Length: 63
Image (cartoon, rainbow, N blue to C red; front, side, top):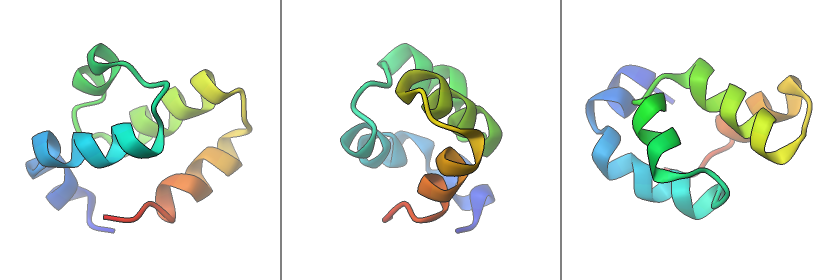
């Protein structure tokens, strides 16, 4: 997945992110603003999973 494209289309991608990780708030999504590392960190924090698992989920995200 090309994160430059994700960042450029963040407003459209936010819906996909919200559908997959519904515990993330709109404010958190605004804060993430298309940055992969921030997304991984927030998923890890919200879902109480290991960083490696959060990274794996982000990589397998369907766009």
